[in-house]
Length: 205
Image (cartoon, rainbow, N blue to C red; front, side, top):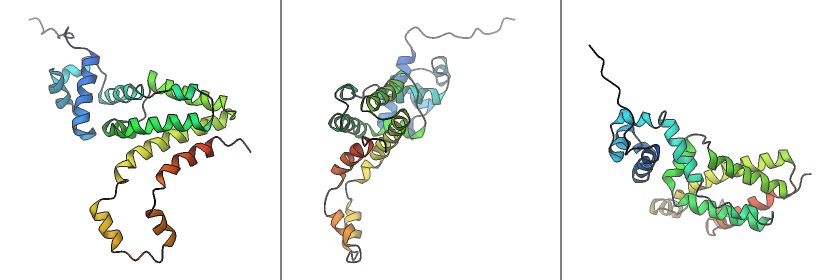
């Protein structure tokens, strides 16, 4: 009796097709929707067939995350190594992240490595090197910015006060918290990025 032959890859299916299908599922339903069955249905393949093109779900998420990082404009980091260039770069990154919250979920769920994430890291290190920071301070600045941008993007959904937030705030006596009351009446978020940029580009003590 001859055993059943294992089917090879379909000619009309590729890793690119699987990743693109997974991205569509992710963008529609977020990270919790990114299941093997939903990706398979979107790509029109059997669930087990996905592993013909990617090793596992972690690897698939890694590819999605790295591909997303490849959409970030690195051009400002190749301009003059000053605060204006870094601020322009970061504003672009935050705008890109806030427009794709489901992709940011990937970046928050696991470390991502690939040609695009490595190119981004290298560009930041090069920028800080050109700005005159020591090697170790450049490493710290790059790591800090990576975490800060992710955090800012993840928390951006809570920046706009909800009706419940406004109701709770109005019902609270803020006389004991005068500085907080003044802060809540303004919009300090716009200055936060500027503060981060100038703090990072301060020279070594």
